[in-house]
Length: 101
Image (cartoon, rainbow, N blue to C red):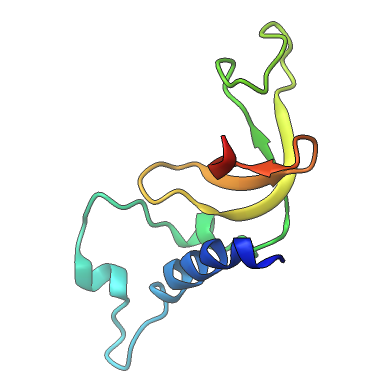
């Protein structure tokens, strides 16, 4: 991946690392307690840079026809959003990431 994606890769690694238990068997997420951050091991097991298909909302600027049911956007997984159950991707079609919007 180009250097511009290194911060996304590091953030994803740190979030995944927080699920690994320490010597006492506790994860960093358990030590923090329940907070405003979304953390879910099943959701965060995506491999950084893997192929993903995102489902866009009808209001998203990349959706040209709001009556069309297939609003999928193909791209490369960049990481999960910290406060919502969404993820970022590099769009193959638009050649930009969610951060470039």
